Image 1 (spheres, rainbow, N blue to C red):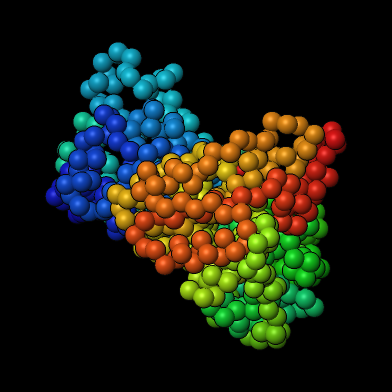
Image 2 (cartoon, rainbow, N blue to C red):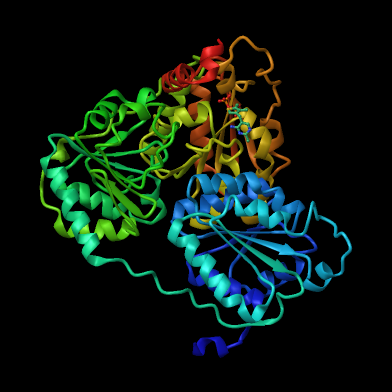
Length: 551
Ligand code: TPW
């Protein structure tokens, strides 16, 4: 308890220090009057760098992507009401896709809140914002007394990391400068070591007895920084390894028996066959959802699978509770011995060798052009949006990737690219449809302030193509031509519109040589041209859903 006597810092600085101690490397923010005192502390304390964007949805996506890429906390600071409510969708996506975001919202001062007057930015009640955030975060701390704030903040940060889900902290503006005890994150909860070993023994035995064991790695593996361990496990066991749709991009940097990405009816047939016919399928940290399983959940017999996610393990009709994935992997690695000879497996051949000619560009040409580019100049991290962009990325060689594969919220790729560059220093490549670009493309204007230079591929089909595919008989999915290229220069970047494969090749080559400002390549695609995987995916959804029955 002695640490509680130490009041060296004010509440704002103590919080920033705790965030840094928990692995945060920057804050994304948009201030407002309820947040100004905290923003002043952020700037003056210099504990973490502050990056300002233009619109809260972009802010949430940037911090989410920063967290996803580096397997650490993403932090956003916003003002009360207008700011925090404006970010709800981005936080909902982070919750659904298990991204560890810390949302810090300014709030009316304690004294103002007690005054009885309605305050600006207030909606139904002063608690409304908390109630909304309770639905999309795994823990919340409303600070009302700096003397006790250390314990509340320590608890929410611990839960953020433990569950890899967003948490919410509300900071009344008149408290941030008051002294606060040093924040010490609590000790990890104890795990029953005997249960961990028994569980691992049982899993190894089931894998050994199976005639076609397979590992399927999902997003928790990335979130908890376990890629290296899962890769090592697959190598030691000699068992083929696939990623889920959401997990795509993992294992880019190590040699593993990776067979590709499982995407059910829409994905590679060899991978689908391996997963759906396995009699010993080990799912590691996978989100079991319709999109993530390529609308083929029914083809995977979950009753026979071994499922390790959400801090528990299910197999053979019983459950091991309170078993974090990292502990399970340590135990599995201790026991692992060769079962198969999976190193003979390899990934599907993704398209390469773009024909550099004057034919119009197709989505497959875009995949080829990117693969060739990476081959010539080295890989880049990718952020992707929904629609044709995402399905195009599925044909790009495995490189680190962040994409909203489950929640499928539009507008992610551009701000996510900024978040990736801020957090990692690496130059990212973003793929985004014109519909999604209309939502958050303006955030590119912030690149000049921080020297970010992402390469943005806008797949402009003047259409909400994904929706048109669902409902081809309607007209409202066609969009007008916004000539995005022309907005690049005033925003501090360079824009080029391309229509042919030669133009695409040249624009990419030029972009990669030009550093220090963003490059926007607007690729004109005719409507109704889409990757085969997208056609298959939509057909699968239509078969299962009311959309299919109606048409
Ligand atoms: C925040 C619903 C899913 S796909 C889509 C919409 C409107 C059209 C996407 O058009 P875009 O890409 O970006 O031009 P493409 O390849 O299909 O042409 N609002 C949000 N998220 C979603 N998912 C929707 C609406 C939707």
